Length: 490
Image 1 (cartoon, helix red, strand yellow):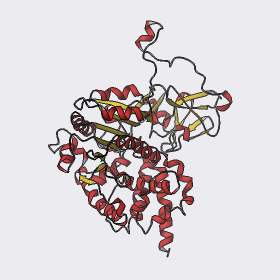
Image 2 (cartoon, rainbow, N blue to C red; image 1 turned 30 degrees about the vertical axis):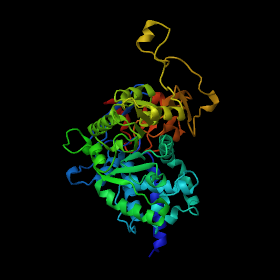
Image 3 (tube, one colour; image 1 turned 90 degrees about the vertical axis):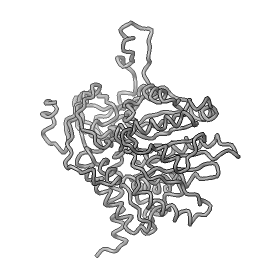
Image 4 (cartoon, helix red, strand yellow; image 1 turned 120 degrees about the vertical axis):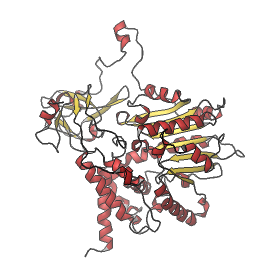
């Protein structure tokens, strides 16, 4: 019989595989609960995506919030996604089997916590808390001495690193405006998971609030208390509010998120920052709208910063460009501070500050002067050319030099670049002709530049979809021999 040590090594290998294979699950590709899968056509690439039919029916009335998040992570993702998410759930549940704090959470959140500890002990991310939140019986497998064994998985962890560093940057600038003697500023972490920020960044200048599913809050409270008992210099716990964010829908009849926060001690009039880290993917669009309506009302009376590393689809933003984002927040009384997009606009790193807080501009002026200037990634909006061009201004119907011909491969790694801020990938088809596609797979939004070119087709590294001349999908591994006939029928 295998020893316990051998079993845990096997579990860690399973968790590492599941984490890497699920690197994009719950990020750009996760569907919100309850949405109906649709076919889609990309006119610029000539790509078509067939409808995906869920293979199981789930009674959501009997599901816990954790179950709903796990189900959303797998929904409509294709066979491999279901398998890897299931493996991930089994692996991380096993890693926490000996946890004495009763942690109950979605595999997604546990995966993020372990990834943060892995990155920190690899010297890539500043987080001295994540590792100590892991179970003592199993955390040694991502200890500083052991992380070298998992170094092959580091490239798949960049999304966690990027979003953590971005939100840390915004938080640092927000707290930089605080003056000694003022009321402590307030930070609200929405859909917190195991964020660690409230433990890492606590101090006399800030009060943290974490909003999470009710069934998660109890176990997390015990875990955080265990950490602060071992670290008396970090003895301040965040105020935790148990709440299903889908209750933010305007017709839910439940108290708003601001009502719940103010009941817990949030003070209107004190500068407040709200963070969203990969949580809006899992909410119904009307819940996203209701949530933002509450924050809009709050921002009218309080200097407020909102920071996202998240989907903005629930707010109607589906493109990666700054001018698509700014009006959405401007109409709500917020001025955009920073913005960049990943995966063709599936994820936005953006922050905004309220502009209607009784004419107060101190926080806005401070953050604007300390953050990098906005970069307009949009195509030009006017031209001195003909009237026809003015009707639909664009630089797309022109030729641009993006690389040398010899750098575009017919085999191996494709060539990735950007033009006007839009990521694209180049390769050669079977006839040696250069093909240029948007650098995003239409199936699950993984970057095509991480794939490989073979026999004139570019194969996505995630689920193996292949694309050839004019971006036409020519192979789906789970549908051998059916792709051509299927797309002709759409």
